[in-house]
Image 1 (tube, rainbow, N blue to C red):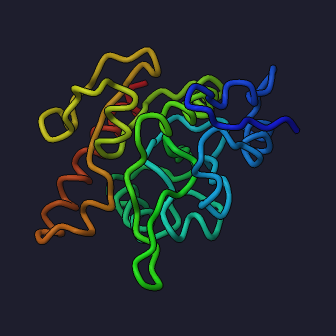
Image 2: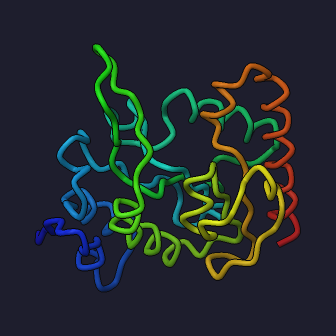
Length: 212
């Protein structure tokens, strides 16, 4: 498999298979070196879910647990997302989850690995993988989880705090919406309140699925 070295302008575009499927994309992404994060991440963490999924959830990047297991949204934030989906009555089998960036960016703090926000060069380098996932899935609803995903997909001026839960025009999907990342709920003092608001956002997603 060909691999890319990062010189500031490279992206993963050259690694995208000519006739992509989720399986082919996942296999190709495993060898991606389009940005420096492959050097510190344990492995590429590609998206996961059915090729027939109607809803695509996009987060920022894998966390510590995801980096270890090689699967997205399997850590505490992922478990909270699963709880919210259950509350909103969204069938998990109708959902595909992925991230804007496919490697874990972190810095050491004692024995812990502390999350670091990816920069725009890293996001741009990884973007072809996400675009390919969208092209294969053709989701009815795309949900941006958190500011990084929302700004990467909807523009740098997008503010989740002002526009969460609102339908946004986007060529990526017939219905596009942004809400908070579940990790922010875990950090909140009023966690129960924030969780209920998150569920309300997902209930809007459930309504969009039912209407489509």
